[in-house]
Length: 201
Image (cartoon, rainbow, N blue to C red; front, side, top):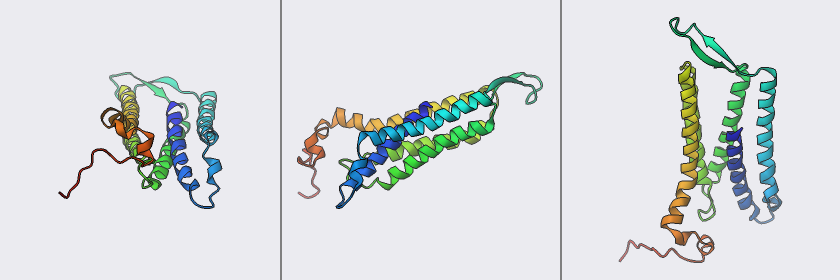
């Protein structure tokens, strides 16, 4: 659910970027969709669907602990039985769907003016997120016992760091090393970059 909340926020931000640039076109009625309530509705709807799915899963067939003595007869492996594998994969599939939609929308608006556009950062973060979880699926199916949990922890941490690095590292770089770019005048193209390099002398 925390993952869905994070990805939903990124999806809402990406959609707002798209709506904002569609609203500046002549005779466009998209301006009414660029307020904060639309973002809140998108995030709430995506989060509530995952919440309902998880509650239904826990009420009908919750996960439970089981002992696996078939994989290795010499060992007793303690595993977590999902209770309903279908619900488990639907939950992950829904998360994958949100990340895919966010990646597609960000990819479509990646060439909008760079002064306002954050879609490129979102595209890279969602691409890294999807790559980690696509690699996790075959790894989790081929692992047993504690190694399955280790793979889940690695996928969670790797995807979280991928989003954080791709989204916020460029911002931190600008704040720390290019502070003149962190101004309204620069964003509105009223001031030129003080560091101008000319290829011609």
